[in-house]
Image 1: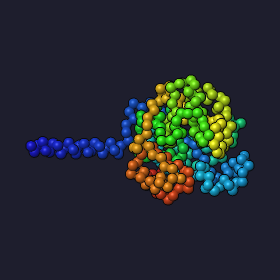
Image 2: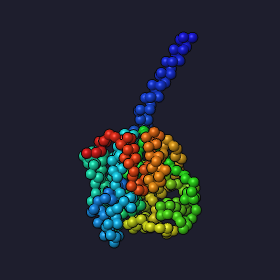
Image 3: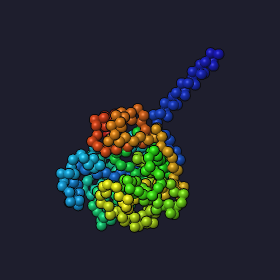
Image 4: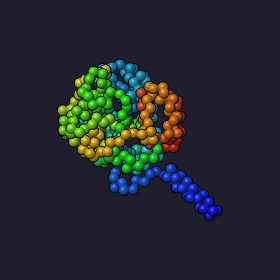
Length: 342
C-alpha cells in the first residue's frame, strides 16, 4: 500500500510540473514554421501640430477644435508601445511588423533599426489622388498594398493587445466574431439609424451575397484579426466602384447616412474567406477575447480584471481620455520594454 501511496504522490508531482511548464511556455507552433504571418498596424498621432494643421486645412475647420480631447479617436496615449510589448511577450512568432502612418509621422519611441520594424507611409501604398486621408476605412483598404507583406497577416489598431500566449494555429485561417445581442447583426437591408461602420460592413456583405448566396454577415471581433492579401486584392479588383467610393471618403461622415457607400475591406475579406470556406468562423470566448469601452464606466472599473483574466486578445477602445487605471494595467501587464523600442 505504501508503494501505491508514494506512486500516487509522485504522479501528482509530475503532473503539476508538466502543467506548470505548459503554463509558462508559449503553446507550440509546430507544423506552422513555414507559414509567415506579418502584423500590420495603422497609427496616427492626433496631437501632432503639423497633422492638425493639415487636417484643418482640408476640412476648413478651426485647428483649435481638433486639439482637445473631445476628438479622442486620434488622441495618442502610447498604446502602440504597449501593444508591441504584448507582441514580443506573447506572440513572438510574428514575422515583420508594418506600421502605416501619415507621411509626416513616425512614433518617436520606435527602434527603427530593428530588422522586423517597417514604417509604411500613406504615399507608399495609396494613390496620390486620394491623399491626404483622415479616415481609417480608406487607409485600411490599402494595407494589402504594402511591399513585401506576407500573404497571411494580422491587422491591428494600436489599442489592441495580446494578453496571453497565443499560437499561430489559433489564428491562422480563423475568423473570430463576437455576436452581441443587438439588431446591427441582423443581415437586413440598410436602414435609417444604422451608424456608418455598420453601413460599411453591410455594404460589403450585400455585394458578396450576390455571388456567394451562403455568405453570412460576419463582423470580426474588435481585436487583431487574420487577413489574406489575395482576398483583399480580389475585392479591390472585383468591386472597383465601391473601392473608389471608399477611397474618396477623406473623413468619417457624421450622423446616420443610409448611403455611406463605403466598405471595410479587411472585414469584407473575412466574409469572403468564410463564404469560400477558407476561414473557419469561430465564436469568441472569455479566455480568448476582451473588449473595454472607455466611455462605459463599468468597463473602466473592470480594467483591473484584465490582469487576472489575461484574455489572449483584447482591446481597450480609446473612446475617451483614459483613467489612471489604464496606465496601471498596461504597466502591470507589460512592464518591460520590447526590442522594438529605443
